[in-house]
Every structure is written in C-alpha cells, then in structure tokens.
Image (cartoon, rainbow, N blue to C red; front, side):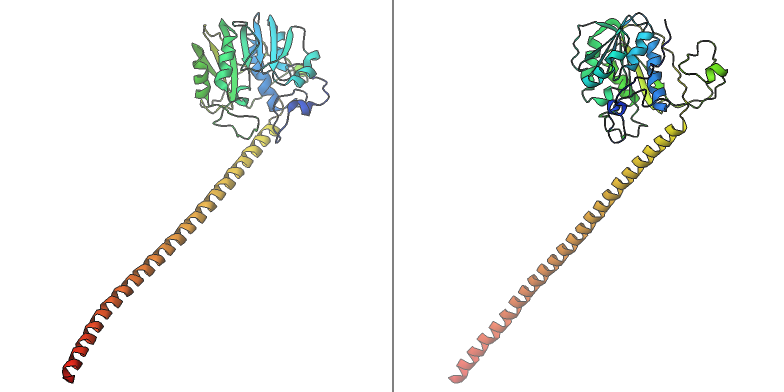
Length: 339
C-alpha cells in the first residue's frame, strides 16, 4: 500500500467561493485556502485514517467536496474511487485535477445512482451533520456497500461544538452516531478525534518539509488522556462483517495559536449570544411578572369596589325599611288624632 499524503494545492480561481463561506464558516474544506491551519490537520487526518483501509477496495467518497480526500484514497492504493457531491460547480472546477483513478459524479446521498453492493469502502466525513434525513443517508450508504463492506463516517461532537456553523443542521453526540450506525450494521466501533499538543524532533530535511509520513522512523508516545465524550469530532466504523484494525492517525501542523484563538473567539461569542438570550428572557419574565402584579392589583381593586357597592346596597335596604315603618306609624297616629 502506498502511504497517502495531502494533495498538492489546486490552482483555483476562487478558493473562497469553493469554500462556500457563510457567517465566517466554510461549507467545505479547501486545502489551498486553509493550508497550515488546524482545520487542515483535522480533515487530512480523517482521510489518512481511512487510507489504511483503502488498499485494493472499490471506494466511494460520499460528500467529497473538492476531492482532496478522494485523491488521498486513490494514492493509498484503492482499486477505484468515486467521489460524489451535490455541488456540481465545485466538481467541475476540480475534475481536471484529480488522478485518472478518481471519478467525480454529482449525486444526492439519499438516492445514489449505484447498484447494491457496488463498493467495498464508503467514506463519509463531515457530511451527515449537513443533512436532516440522516437515517436515509446511512441506509443508502449501507445499500451500496458489499456484504463485508466498511463504512467510515464522522460528525462534530455536539457536546463540545460551539454550535455556530450555519451549514450544520444536526450535529450528533457520540452515542447518537453509534446508535445511527447500529440500526444498519451488525458491528460498530467509535473513534475519537481531538487536537493534542506535541513536541517533535526532526532532522533538517523533515523539519523543513511537509507531507512526510512517519513510518517506523518517528516513534510517537502519548502522555496525556481525555475523557470519552469530550472529543471535538467523533468517528465511527460500521460493517456487517468483522471490523478491521484501523488504528489511529496523527497529522502535525504549525497552527495551534490561531486555532485556539479562533475557538476561544467562537466560544466567547456563543457565550455572549446565550447571555443576551438569557437577558432577554429574564426581561420578558420581569415584564410578565409586572403585568401579572398589575392585573392582580386591578383584580383586588375591582373586588373591593364590588364589595363596597354590595355593602352600600345592603345598608340602603336596611335604612329604607325602618324609615318606611316610621312613616306608616306616623300616618296612623295622625289619622287617630284627627278623629
């Protein structure tokens, strides 16, 4: 198997247009626009992980975007790679830049134009959170997989995500992703992706180059842990056959400061938005409480007024009766006196 590497930068006319920015959030990853950033390490790391299962397989890259991952899978030794995406204009832009073993097609993941059991490996990274019909997507991906085929997918972990990407319709929790695949596959395994600090020692060549794979020459030691469920991205493997040993992947980048600053900015803005919403809710509650108290005071005033009028009517009736009696007695006395 040939080690997969991140593809060379595409010479694109409008990389920002390809990325599909909305409210400062890209709809898709574009290597030449985001080179050296943490987002590149995240996206390339997922395909590097999937590349270990690509050798000799018929591969579908579902939601391929600009097809950088399709290229990585082809370079990893896949028998064939088909990349599909709804964005036809994006595929047309990058079609001439992918290797001959990669075929790009416009297709909806909920209704793929392939026969049953057509692929041995389906890769669907950072796609399902863009779609509300997630059951339909996984059902269709399972349909086109061979009986022993393998699905690899991922989603931002909703438990730690800032939740401010306007392109994401439903991010999943780890247990939700596991349950989603479990409805369509016999065997499911979760994997976790997180940013880790590292310190690396290289010779001059490795220090000044990129795209190199570690192989056996770069021993790696992990000296920190995270709790399950705290990962930024959750990945999953699903199959009706035995799951292969997938291991992990590590991609080193030099952009840790920008990543954490941007993440802190987003979390701060999210906290501000939530505080503003909470403030507005409290203000509405205060106004509602004030209106309720005013209504209660008005109710008490009306009740008192009604009670006062009722008492006044009773008093008037009580006074009229003795007066009428006295007047009647006075008339009787006068009649007697006139006799």
